[in-house]
Length: 342
Ligand code: YSA
Image (cartoon, rainbow, N blue to C red; front, side, top):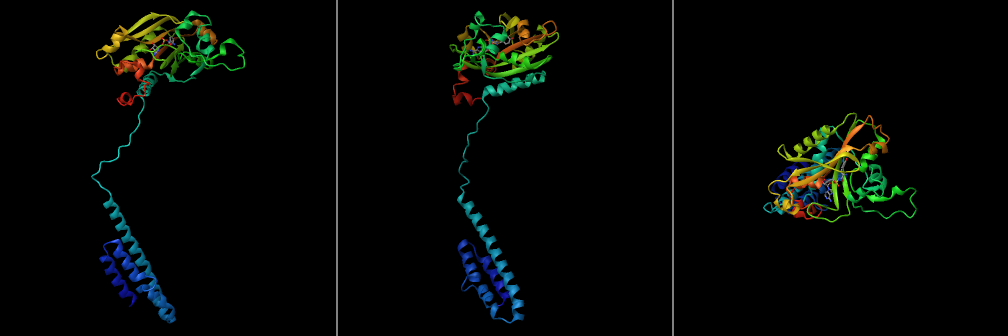
């Protein structure tokens, strides 16, 4: 059979092949190693005259390539069709559980955003602190009764005897040590917040954890005063909770401020359980005050020129108010029924 005729017959055959099996039969018919019709022509080339070989050779080789290509293409179509048949599109898809940010991380991000808009920078510090930064530099020397305000997890001390009394290691009881660390390295004016985890060796209840989060705030400069503090805190709390939130400023005492105060927020309906367990409608959210001159002296600031306010707000307490959560211990319970609500 001539190459032309072979091509015509192949075109007809491949159209008729409706599955992989009949396609294989077509391949064998034309390209089969022994009896393939094109194979035979290719094998006979060597017996032809030079003139004939030059004419038929290229035609036969071109046809072989054409046939191989057409067979492969058609095979590809059958395979894809078969795969589609194997998929049951009526089956429900597989649900892959996706994680999400913990409610406290989400809230911390919101707090960071609000303070960024108020032109505060965010800095972070170590969770393992020394006695010096956690207490002494904050005007709470060893033996000071106020140390009892912060029940402390002390760490095993290195075997080597410490060179001074106050480099003993502890888990920071508040974020305030970062006031000192920051001021040691920076000159005023500045305003910063310091979010972070803190630790207290104390009994837990609905509003107290041993491991919780604080956000320290510190604004220092010439002429910074209590009115500035009140403005910043009210703006922050109203942006976080809405304009209607009821805020209470109370006088209080911390050795590293003078005067010292605390800020409470009024619990609202939906928080009856928490109100009952605390026997109060108000929840304390932060300690604060005007930075004590002794704190400025510890970092060699000129107390005649520099004033500042500082505060430490409890992140879990803010979350309890915002999301009407009755028990602080839920945050670190690892209970997904709680976590997945947010
Ligand atoms: C005060 C003056 C400053 O110039 C700067 C910061 C401060 C705050 C101070 N460092 C401090 O830690 N005060 S505090 O012990 O009263 O805690 C501050 C806030 O942390 C509390 O108002 C409360 O919101 C939260 N908090 C305290 N103990 C807690 C707690 N949250 C959960 N569990 C606890 N056990």
